[in-house]
Image (spheres, rainbow, N blue to C red):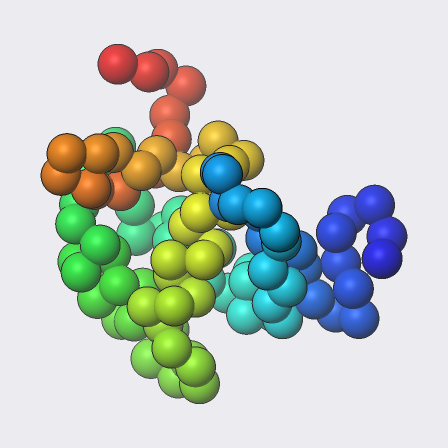
Length: 99
């Protein structure tokens, strides 16, 4: 494993509070991450809507869009690129200005 967390074209995801990393295919990570950042803005949306938007961005994605969306969103949250709001849970893209 190198310092970037990649292992045999896989990326280590480490969401907030996770005890161990989850390794996923690097190409799938990048596809979902780019789609997430394209479909999110500063307005929080529900997970169901987030998955729908990501699915529309990646109509030929071969695996579970909802599972990859959840996993990659947790990694982006830990990197500060995405905000997971609570009560109710909603997602938005991180901006320089925090409320």
